[in-house]
Amino acid sequence: MASSTVASAVPETVLSPPAPRPRGVVIAGVVAIVLIGLNLRAGITGAAALLHDLQAVLGYGPLVAAVIPSIPTLCFAVAGTATSWLTRQLGLEKAILLSLVMLAAGLLLRGIPSTGMLLAGTVVGMSGLAVCNVAMPSFIRVHFADRTSLMTALYTLTMTTGATVVAVLIVPVAQQLGSPSAGVGSIGVLALCACLGFLPIALHAHRNAPAAEAGRVSPWPLLLTRAGLLITAGFTVQALLAYSVMSWFPYMLVTLGLTAAESGVMFGLMQLVSVPAGMVLVAVASRSGMRRTAFYLATVTMAAGVLAMLVLPVAWAPLTAVLLGFGLGIFPLVMVMISRSGRTTAETTALSTVAQSAGYLLATLGPFGMGLLHSATGSWTLPLSLLLAVALGQIIVGHLLTAQHKAPQAAGKSVVEGTS
Image (cartoon, rainbow, N blue to C red; front, side):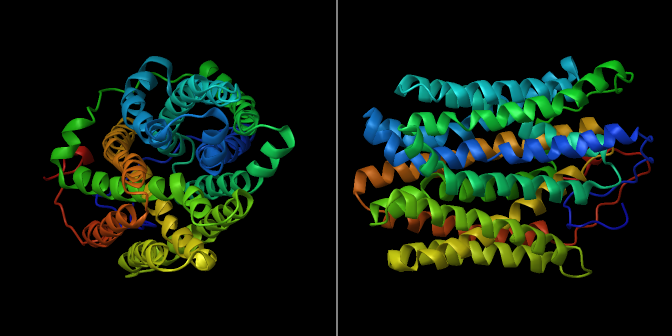
């Protein structure tokens, strides 16, 4: 494409014009994107806001407390690798529908007041979420090929909105229901709504299934290309930072003296700021010569937020939440980059698979390591210091991602065959 919202490390290719779709299908697709987006972080942020209460009520030890926030990224890494195979077997839309059913079932299962059910429900739900995460860039590519930036912005906007609303309301809801388990399980109702909202899309795709796309793109060789390596590195670092912060920020505030309700509000503020932050960053990146500036704004602000959490007293939590929230706005930039990659859906899915699977596997070290280090030292100083080092590293990765890289490409050559 001649003009891109975000500088992509992937050489850009010209796509054939998308086939016209019935208006009802287009509207249903937009509704589906909104409903799915509302769910993609809600289950994670809702559990994060209740981690302290869940541990107090269920009585699990520090090892389980460190494992629970690590399950999402681990599932994203492991289950996400199956997405390419699943979409080939079922088709893209039916694979997404199956993932939403798994998400709803897992979140509802977490409502049973048992440590085993909390763990099992998190694994099932986050495995469904993993497939949905990897498949959504391809879904946007297929259904909105001429509006990838707009639909990706809508997708990430609703994702952060859902995370914000759940983070703010989940503690009062759990208190009204009389149980943190019931509170975290109630998020499954939102996932059920996404299943019902996506059903018309899956039925339309089933009735109008096109001929299978020729060829198959293997994800893992992409790590040997410059494009695949840079995008995977960028996704890895932002995921490690994002899930470390989202998993432990409310818990840290509680251990530093805030109440669970107050920490939930600060967590909600952080998520709320990330909504306009993502829009601002995408808008900045869309201007000529401002792509690298957008990445600098996001990466430097994230580093400043981690530093503020490390050195400022808890009374400055609102400032810390704002800085961290703005830093989380980098996610839309990375997702647009993935959605615009490849000449075909298979190529987009392959790059999405390798970036998210490898990225989330490495990102698991963030929330798990922070939990273990806090249990071992009784302090957040060492975990936050290491997180600050990663945040500073993200600045370098962002610089490389936005480098003007010219990769000569013969006509018709696949983007995933780019230079190393």
